[in-house]
Image (cartoon, rainbow, N blue to C red):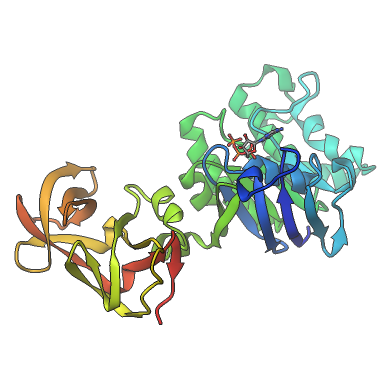
Amino acid sequence: MARIELADLAHHYRPNPATDADYALKPMHHVWDQGGAYALLGPSGCGKTTLLNIISGLLIPSRGRVLFDGKDVTHLPTESRNIAQVFQFPVVYDTMTVYDNLAFPLRNRGLRGPAVDARVREIAALLDLTPDLTRRGGGLTADAKQKISLGRGLVRPDVAAILFDEPLTVIDPHLKWELRSKLKALHRALDLTMIYVTHDQTEALTFADTVVVMHDGRVVQMGRPDELFEKPAHTFVGHFIGSPGMNVLPAEIDGATARVGGVGIPLARGYTAPAAGIRTEIGVRPEFARLAPAGTGVPVRVRRIEDLGRRRIARVELAGHPMAVTVPDGLSVSGEASVLMEPAMVHVYADGRLVEAA
Ligand SMILES: Nc1ncnc2c1ncn2[C@@H]1O[C@H](COP(=O)(O)OP(=O)(O)OP(=O)(O)O)[C@@H](O)[C@H]1O
């Protein structure tokens, strides 16, 4: 396994790029630690595949370098990079047994005998494939085949990294849940650097120690799942993670108070007012904003209450701006009401980026 450094990396598919918009990957510099479990998360077209292809060697970046443990691999082909890959669709040899499919990447590297046998049996056990070892790949279900693909990705203990490109897309929803948790356990058991590409926040948050959120060709935040939830570094992260996502409201900042349409909202600390012309907003997640009776907090008007099963969400308007807030158990309010926000969880954003208190 390896520490992966993306040094001043950028990529454009268009010739002669003039502005940032011409770059599929805007300039970035990141270090991905050895042994980490990373999820690359973002909507379609944000640049995930471009970045993965640069790491795997399918694409040479227009600018910058890729280093594996300090060694420059930017121009090395995939087969010389010592990585394993698992794709959306199963890659399984139908005529080989499950055992031989799992052994293939090891034998391909010249390994033979007990070392192969021990590792194949270890991976088969971790993926619950032991009863199928003597069956041929061809007769298995799509789910079982994808498990074998995962096993083939995981079987080599000496890889620099394993790259997973939306590996659970074809898996039945029931098994998906199981495999997601299993991959996390496998990461702990095998101590490998794993990079998992997905547009599904649940997959990313379940699997990864570090989630790398991409938006429009940039990494907008790299952090633990709880950091992304509690302190989104960008309003995009606030929207994209969580359901419903973070409320983002236009605001003016006056020391330790935010004003939304003239309504004051207390902040935990004082802020320097952003310069004129900068878009200023506050962000607060529905989980940190509670509905309350009128006259007890920030005035709002209740539009409707949604029952989400385990919790209720109120859709309200604050000075004309829509917001989603939590309805505490037992509370019954309609029309005029209040919202109580946790000041430490009300964040300030300037042109979409988180602003730290003064
Ligand atoms: N071969 C290519 N030639 C030109 N433009 C490309 C090429 N591949 C990707 N792009 C563009 O680069 C940007 C990033 O695409 P990329 O495929 O990396 O995003 P993604 O996040 O992986 O999306 P998806 O989840 O849909 O695969 C998009 O605007 C896309 O249209």
